[in-house]
Image (cartoon, rainbow, N blue to C red):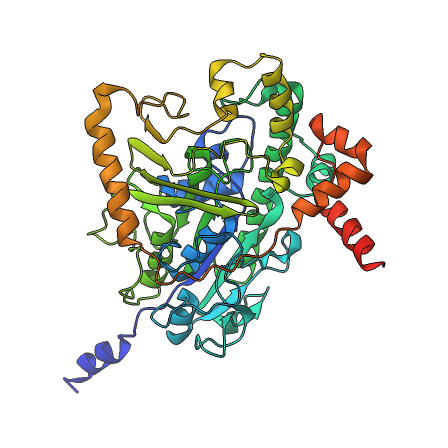
Length: 487
């Protein structure tokens, strides 16, 4: 009988409950939330997550385009290392044997992996990685390439579960006008605060306000998911991670290595602790992948370049960024970002920032408006930066003093020591991330053919586009494809 209390206390010890984990991935969004001090936008649900969780102020993706960035996050390894750095390429090429998607490890550790959500726009199932994969099914990397177990629904019987949910509304799309028209509180264009490299023009203000309408819609989707967790009794054991997959789709954003392209929001809500914390240390998007495995109680595979953010030994000084092929633009730029400095090396300076990429012609009203203003000599020096005939071979910015990256210090002798240090660091990190293969099999972009067709057969709509009107790229793609097939 004397031993009974000891037996009871021993039998009461149970292994810790593994948390559910939800990764919310908003598309094409920079630090454009109310809790990151973006003017004119209301994001109450994400504000609350930030207040009750941890908000990171210096998180950067490793590529400013969706598929390379997502490839890196899916493997937890820099996209350059796994030869996934060219946009929409190598879709039939398996990962090298040493590398696996992180969902493989979660499933090995007893997690149900879920892609998408039944209540979000488009159902949130985007994967978009530059290696051979399938949405559902097992993974062995040789004949089976499934990343997830099921779609759209998380239930009690799925626990512990991991759900990756894409929030597409903030991606440029034909739905933007509809979302704005149905909003009960559309953002007032007169209230927005534009960055100094954008011209203060009514069309650009309207486009920015419309973008913020999408951000508010996305925040409502976050609220809907949180409410479902509450209703199903899962809120107290579910870690929620919110990020952007790359920066906003506007000048100097998506597709560029400047701050609006690489700098993303990161909020992690853990109901078990870390409440109301703000962290300013440098984080790479691949660190989020490692953090998910850490939450699941797993060791981090040696091939991962990401590291668990909440590990007491976590320390990152730089994030290495790359920009390579995007559709027809075979770019090559490299960057390192620290908390205080940004260095960019442009290996193809002859390709200007305004490369007239077909896809972006449809989706950047500010581009068309500012081209015309530039031709008329109506842009100031900050606004003219995007329209230089050549890119600088090197760029150096003091982020503390120049957060908008308007003053390139690369040619200032006073900053030669910093330039040389970051130049060497970029070269060192590029060598460390040397690709494991040189397979190069990109998908042919359709936007070039569609743009030429619009120019030739829809000159009225093309002229509207040149005046800053989004004429409906996806609708035009469908129409073009129907014409091609004779449907």
